[in-house]
Length: 236
Image (cartoon, rainbow, N blue to C red):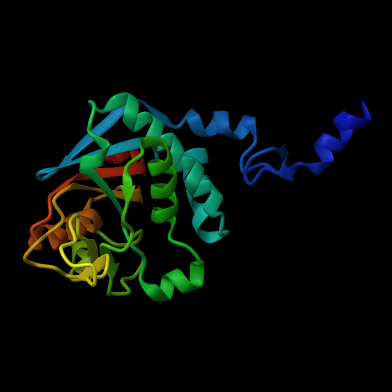
């Protein structure tokens, strides 16, 4: 009995309900979160991009994403990324993992400093732990400190995110000279030869991922699609 009581007191409170939990979220709240999972892998279309969404942006999942970002819970992002990765592997036809590079949607440096972490990168880390894909968070930079999107309409979102991204450091697959650094700045003559999968927390109008994909494609890179944790009911 004493051992059982000690195990309860030594556990941390669940981030969602404050019950004792051995992980960032207790088993009860995990069930609540998983009730937001889409019955079938939701695949949307955004021009020539496919969008893969894990869950419905509502209820417990909406609250969990808000807590992750505004209460600074990066572990929540890693957990949700792992769930996204499991669902991706069970829903998407087999893809050679050496052919996929995962690029999280970046935060502007000012927002990154305020928050302390990029939620999309934490989700991408969890996703890559499950899928085995290569994570390359430095390929895309955010150069415009755009305002929050939730109060903007579709046209305003597009204008807000316009010119927000720039290509950063692209890893070269073959190095001919030993003195050449492993990462080079914008090597336009030799773009990354693998397909890029963008990762973000929420997909709504697609303005952000469209702008990110456009910037990468202008440098000759192939963007195969987007994987996100959540999308609102109205998008489905």
